[in-house]
Length: 280
Length: 295
Image 1 (cartoon, chains in turn red, orange):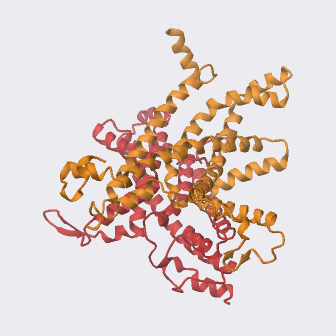
Image 2: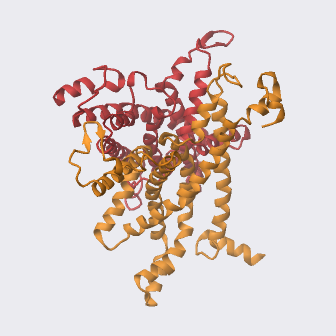
Image 3: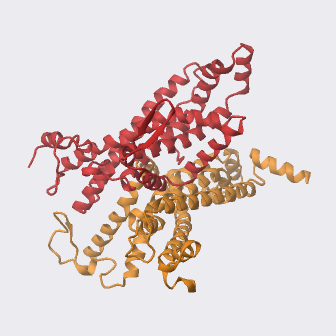
């Protein structure tokens, strides 16, 4: 019987392959379950944060392309958003995994005239790469649609005032359009972030393999539920971790929202509602 | 299916493909699309019913009922839905067997949880191990539907309670002024009017429900994902129709199927919105009225 400190040392970073190699097989203590499911949260955080950070910028580009007058930009963006919002993320994972495993294993030679190199493909068949790419594309589409809504509801007066002050082009976008768009879209974007974190639990239940049993929180919760045949302990632990994560997201996004609204008179500031709506 | 399919080895090109796509297994694959649609159509009204009760609970005058309603909706929204899909069927199954065990075998002295086993007396097993296989499968599907209804009921409760709050206060006060009781106000004024406010949220919910159906695969239902994996995997020459790994094409077909369903639903809901906003004191309703007056 190990004490809980030992368990944390052995399994605290098990999800990323550090510590004890074998998972506990019998006599599961509450501590085992807390530590190992918590260790799995590392992956949920990694996928969620990675996709959000990359997807944020791509989504702004997507919203601008979707709002563009040039159909060569608008049409592909419309299709991209339609495809990724209209189909289940679960199927997208399966599809992209099948696609990534079909890529040649030795990499794709790319010849750019001056330089030629081989694009590595093997990392795409691993969960850390391939699933992140899929989640990134998915959140780009959802957040793109949200930012488009923000972009379209920037008040006309603000833009006219910007014109009157001689803003144009990049400077107008950077100083006027972008901050207002972000401010208007932020509550909806908070929801997207919450549900993106929830969606990260799908990774190891679609075809992406959890090599050496390095999985996410739900993977370990499912492991315990199937080993002990008692779902009433691991799933509530998982629920607790995710509620904490949701609260953290609401807190951080609320702080950013306050900063985005800091110029408004105090009676016009609205508080970010911490009750997530369902957007996915 | 066709006459010329008798010997697959001799076929080529289009004929090979037409025979390949009509094998009995492919027919089961096509059936599973229908199963998915039927399951959605069964789940949606149940979830709506659960959501309606949940929404009424969150508005209740009884504090415990209100807490229950609020706790239910916020718990489901705070935790990934897939966790519930894995948890609810297992929990229900064990709960049911536990209750039957208590009722049918009161003399049983052994503990039910023995290490990593869940042991109930054989009369308490549900469905009984003697029942035909089909009932076991249907039981699994029923548990899956309950799990979906549990999750989507909470989402629907959230949407519906928002819609109930959006019905103009003056409408309810007028009804009260006419001497209606609280129940009458709810039945005659609140509920008929809330649908137009609930529709955008409900249509969104329907889309989410559509996109959640592939998760049935995780519950062991032989759904579209199961067959896509089964049929798409590479087949050696031991099979009548050998082919390399074609999963990518099967999943592409699934993507297209879901895109079609969501697109069709979008069109359907746009029509329903127009229909429901007739005679409502909303911007959309006023537009409709104006159009009607001109015609």
